[in-house]
Amino acid sequence: MTLTEGKMFGVLVVSLPQGQDGMNLAFLAAYSGLLEGRNDWEYFVPPVFDAQQPDGYFKQKEREISLISHHSPLASKKMSQELQLWLFRQYRMLNARGEEKDLVDIWQDYHSSPRIQKKFPLPPGGTGDCCAPKLLQYAYQHNLKPVCMAEFWWGESPKSERLRIGDDESGMIRHHEQFYPACRGKCKPVLTWMMQGLDVDPNPEEINHSHLTPEIVYEDEAMAVLNKPSGMLSVPGKTEDYSIATWAQKRWSDAMIVHRLDMGTSGLIVVAKTKSSYLTLQEQFVKRTVKKRYIAIVDGIVDQPRGRITIPLTYDPLNRPRQKVDYKKGKSAVTEFEVLASQNGRTLVALYPHTGRTHQLRMHCAHSDGLGCPIVGDELYGRKADRLYLHCDHLELIHPVTGKEMTFNLEKPCEFEK
Image (tube, rainbow, N blue to C red):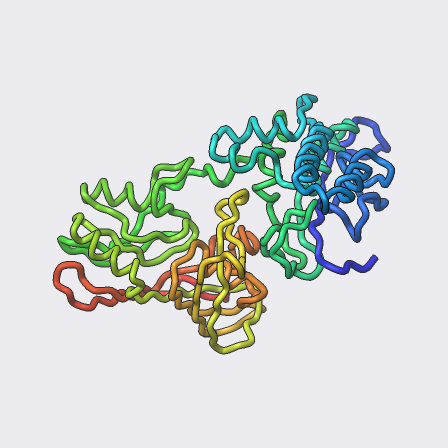
């Protein structure tokens, strides 16, 4: 079979019941949503619920709604919502304890926030049809014990930023033969339920990083400039309080973080020691007069020696903290780049952001309309490594008290392996 577009596939290693075929381990395979318009290919596990039967209730109601949509749009909209609710009730998901719950109840139990429930009262279309839920459901139904699981993209990167029903690549970046975690928006609530009763590895988002300590690059009575280590938060997160902000406040009681770096990003970060210094410094960041340079190692060879990337970005509300490209509603994001060196299928680049959008550099590197080469160690838009190879090594700003121009530089930690 030749794929007309890329697709997410998944493999689940399972432990067989004792004595079955004289083997201990086997594996199951699945694909996300539909594969070339079908959900019944041999070799792969079946869907949790088959809504594609031409004479089934779902398809019959779809045809009925389509017939009245032109002359009665309000009635067709109400019928569509009722049909979607009916469909989600048919997905009765198991967990490792043998308990069962449908997608509507799973979604509402997981999202306790009234804001989320009001904006998204039902799961997104295609929930339950991604690889991981299909694999676990089949394993539980057949008395197979899950051991480990992985999902990977096969084929061309998705070009469309729109949601394809049944898939999990809504505006997400995917590259051939690379592994990815299950999507947050659709799968995280479902997998949180389905994995209950399994002995799983600790959530990497909940690992404590209190052993990390920033280096003081510069300090006076008004401000300090620190070298933030990779893996340390800029400000307290949902599961960890330790951060540059809390570290600085213990050292300087009135310290305030002026800007942020992603947890995985290392390098220069500015701390104000007084409120007046904070306001003056923050204004410079808001007005984009601060000059910054980042260096990164990207996975792939960048052909252009230098260039300018202008890809508008917006947040993905159901897949935070992921961002996505949106040429209609996205906010302007501009990055200049310069190739410094290339070796062993990787490229060392200098990145000069002119805007400060969330994950701007990571998206501009990874997306096919940018460099098309994700930053090494970028688990959201590329693949895991020992760290995120993104480092802020140069910063220029005006001192908040003296008004003098100040320049800070760091040595490059992102060197190629020898």
